[in-house]
Length: 457
Image 1 (cartoon, helix red, strand yellow):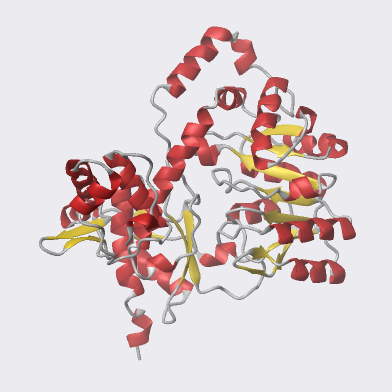
Image 2 (cartoon, one colour):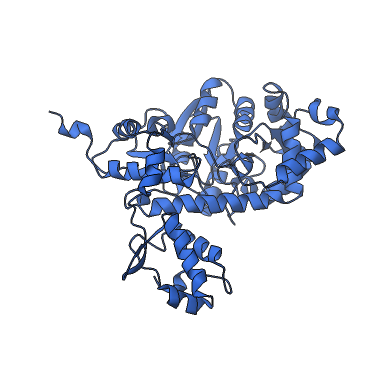
């Protein structure tokens, strides 16, 4: 590694050095086995005390990101896994990498202060009473300012507050399509979306995709040859593949929606902590796009607050989907989120989630085979292609026998398409990085082994 490969501010503290090196590992600028500069050399070039660099290196080694060898130097860890004492403490646990879960951010006193303010300022009826199906006007206005960050320019009248992203999906699909109709979506898609479609008696048909997401030419061919009622697409950090659509594909999908006069349901549940300068499909085709987002990815899974943004002439229709399900969103949760939006508290939570995710991704990057997973710097799930000897079902069963739970790959497949030789790992699910280290060690050993069936006659 040369010093100009990673960028520091002026005279960084030890925490800045740690964060920058961890980020370099996560982005694969720094790779396993690469030698870090000697402490004295790095201290001289950064203009800091040797003790500052020494403290940073010690912290990195304690967290398992580097290995120090007397007389040789300090190297990026080679994926050998956590120290034995950590492993022994967690060895009896079943580690769940199957459930899409994000860590709860360190809120300090924000939650307590918010609750105190709500109690002091509101009559109980305002929080525990009824609400319009679309949500309170103030909450909708707060969401408008939040949506602008993602390039969604809408009025409060177009915003419907929901109990999370899945609720918004149900409200959209139940009102924009009818029982028995077919919805086009990515060939690998969110299992919860599949569950909603099945519950509503809607059929799904898969559209070919690659590492950049849904392929517009395949979508166009499908719409030309089959009756489609709606297009459902995830623009950023798609679940499970982590694909993010480039601008040309967003524009092409918007144009296909116009050509065949189809509503587009754009899900942004997974991209809320990403920095994306590209416009969403909603901004390209606002007359037909219904935009879904959720704040749980930022504030923690317990915050079931999201929204559905619809064209003004269709808000009454999609709003009825909320009315016939839960009636309205939970007032207290919506009030908390509105205050956090207005007070800019979510910015700090996003930074916390990004830093935590970088720590976890940088751990994966130290393992040769786990490091091949398709990742996104802001996504708490990864899409791992399997070595030739493994098939998804066999690998998942073998991982379960070794105490690691992984979601079945077939749960992401739309229809009867071939099963991909890949698995999704939810690296945000374990409660700690130490637990994730144990899981990574087990999985890396498994990836390097042969399935038991290979030895059977």
